[in-house]
Image 1 (cartoon, helix red, strand yellow):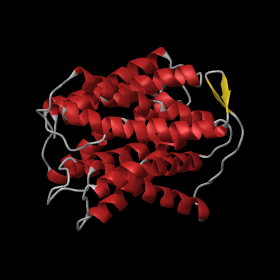
Image 2 (cartoon, rainbow, N blue to C red):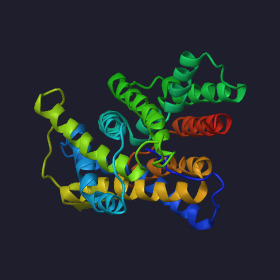
Image 3 (tube, rainbow, N blue to C red):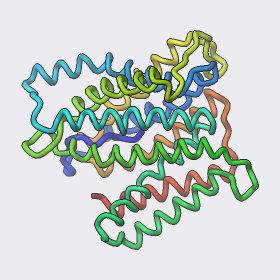
Length: 317
C-alpha cells in the first residue's frame, strides 16, 4: 500500500542505496496481492488474510517497537487516538477491503482501483477548502478516470464485478485516510507531530488485529481459514508459508524498507519510486497466480500510474 510517510528531510542525499531500498519496498508491497490470492484460492476469507497480515506484523514489529521505547519514546496526548484511528481505517479497513477486492478481481485491477485514492483525496480537499486544484492536478484526475475505465475493460463489454469494484473503492477511501493520517508521522515526534512511524504501524497493527477479530466474532464478515496447501507459481507450500509471506515480506519488510527509503531519498522522490508497487503487483500476479492482464488493462494501468505521478508532482503537499 505505498511508501509510508515518515520523518524525512527533503534535502536528504539521494543515493543509489536509497533507490534500491525504495524498489525493495515497492516489490514487498506489490507482492501482498499475489500472496493473499494464493490463500483466498484455498478458502481463506479476506478477513482471515487481513488478520494473518496484521497479527503477524504486530509480532514481528514487537522488537523494533521495544527498541524505540528503550530509547526513550513515551506517548503524548493524542498519540493513542492517532494509533487507534490508524489501526481501524488505514490498516484494518484498507486490508479487508483490498483483499475483498482481490477475492473477486485480479490483483492488478484491485490495486489500481485502490490507487485512485489521490483523486478521491483531492476531491475531498477541494470540497472542504474550496481551493481549486491546479490544471495539472485536474488533468491527472481525468487521466485516472480514463485509466480506471480501461482497467475495468468496460469498453470491450467485459462483465464488471460490482461488489469487487465496491471493495476496491472502499480500499481507496481507506488509503486516502492513510495519506492524511501518515502526514502526522512526517513531523517525527515533536511537540505538535504524531507518534513515530514505527509506533504508528506497530500499534496500529495491534488495534487492527483486534478490530478484525471483533468483526469476525460478531458475524459482520466471515472469518474462515483452511489448512490446505497453497500454490505459488506451481510450487505447493503449506498454508503458513503464505501467511508468513504476507506478514513478513509484504508488511513488515515493506514498511521498514519504506521508512528507510523516505529517510534517504526524501518523501517526494520516495513516493514516486513507490509507484513501482503496481508494476511488481501485476508481474507478481502473472507469475505466482497466473493472472495475465489484457492489453487494454495494461494501458489503463499506465494511465492511472501516470495520473498519480502527475498529481503528486503538481500537489506535493
